[in-house]
Length: 361
Image 1 (cartoon, helix red, strand yellow):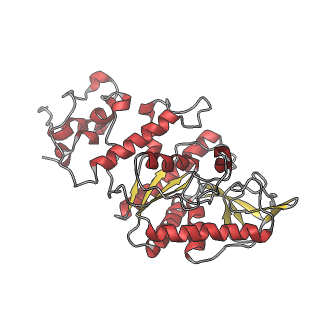
Image 2 (cartoon, one colour):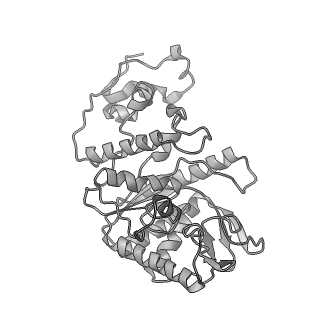
């Protein structure tokens, strides 16, 4: 006997990936913890995360949008002012460092730096420059709006059962004057770029892991019952400031985020990882869920990801349902005849799918 003889079919590439039809590939995620329909769920993160809240609501789950739009806004106005995209009006949070920053301000009752950006007679928040596209009437109104968002974050975390955070980037711009991280490069959406003040930084696995650890510690200190579900956005980088090709820069960023999120999930029972990145970018899916620009995820792709999410929640966490160790696909052996596994030592592991034992010799 060896450990591979008792593994289920999903543990083997042939039966889990190669043999099923593309859309029939399943059980890619086994949740660590349950999310009940009435558990308050918060969402934040990169642009891909904006799909999660509406999908959760459509499934009858308790997604919390804690900053509601004022009455009378059109749907376009609500979208432009970032209502209904995430649980809070922080704008897009691309990096673990930015999540840590928002949580540190909210949970310490700290407004953050008092600097605001002025354009004409309107004022903008450097840490969420696109949330109010028309800006605010004064610097104080700008900071008061940020305080309102921070209070909303603080109150929601105290009551939440789960925070779903979608990591998007490793590239960011640090502010040497304040020691903070900007959500986007100053001088792009708003503000003025200062090369002496604004420094580019590309986070490493260790740095992302450290920021995630700190963010989770802040969350658990405020609410010891809170679980955290991490995922990585499948959306490629729009542009890279590294000087590298956009393809290799994207591969670096997504690999770092995936590694850091996976490591944290291995280290804590209250942290899990959901593979939205793999479900869209994995080569078995042949890129069919990307729009013609090869960047935007199509509605069909979003629906595919969410189907896997909800199907897994319905099956329940590991250990809560029986498994069938004899379930398997066809009993084909890997050998040199298929040409692909001739030089792969681990090809022999395919023989041990769900208890199958290879013939002698």
